[in-house]
Image (cartoon, rainbow, N blue to C red; front, side, top):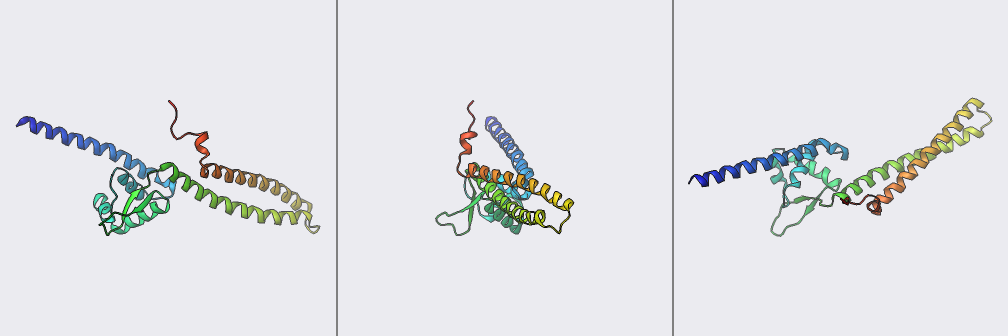
Length: 190
């Protein structure tokens, strides 16, 4: 009889240790998810979902984390937009089910590519417009030589910036084409 009790005690201790190890990771994801543009509650949700084998409904998530359904829905939508969580279908289940996107490498590539391509496009557009205006200043005889000299200096700076953003576009392409994995393999050889 005491052996059974001892076995139960060890089972409880093992479960507590398991939960502590999981909670440490969940907390860290919650603290660092801002790098992806998400809130800490979305990070905690993602961390919790990571340790679940089966897809979860919003009600399941709400019950597990104790967050409001609205907050849960917002977090799921954010994670879905980041392509970190996906909606799945399961026969016989009428509610929406969600699970994490299991390919973290592709999730990072999608996020990285989307954000950088958008930012690069904005920068290159602004640079192109400013270069055109600055070029006009350098040839306008009604502008003082001092202003023309400053415009010439700015043109050189903007051309350097433009080269940088073009390089970033090539870097994004290296990620999107998965060429990055030739340079930095997914698993390091030990």
